[in-house]
Amino acid sequence: MGAGASFNVFRRLDAPELRCAVPEDRAVPAFIEAKGWVFERRLDGGTPRPRGFDVRAADVVARWNGFYLFETWARDEAR
Image (cartoon, rainbow, N blue to C red; front, top):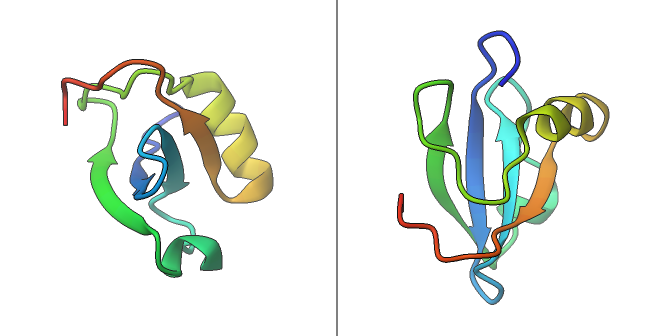
């Protein structure tokens, strides 16, 4: 991840393969605060990344949108 970037990762309850990573220094988007999402974990340089999480894409997309949506394509053993 970018220099010291940390993300809070949220999981969609009705589509558990869908995740949203929000940089720790950014506000959580309103759609996450609504029902249907649950906090999964904090993700930083020392934490195993969920499958499907692209570090470079997360840094770029979160800079523009304030969050990074991604899908896991296999069961995540690091839960």
